[in-house]
Length: 99
Image (tube, rainbow, N blue to C red):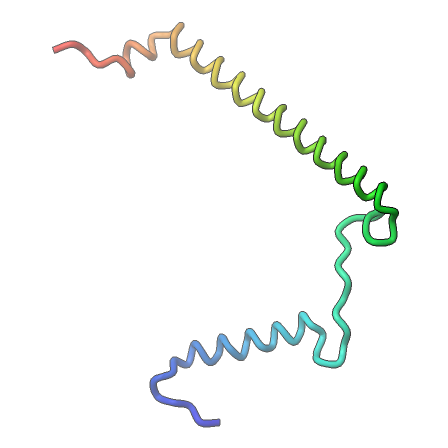
């Protein structure tokens, strides 16, 4: 194979490696692509209404999880502000002394 002098050897190795990985992932040229399954009980085999309900339940759980995390962060921030106000930390480190 002809190799030009202006082409970096690393680029050629990267291209060969990429092609080898793609062939491995795709299983060669004669193998059919594999189906990806993300979770059990979902997919085109289920009725549409059941898939919609499953998606809605997953969305609700994600929203509740987000609200719980947000509430914990607000509580931690509030407790931190109370701590700063009730200790000498604010006077020693945050207040700039008057000239």
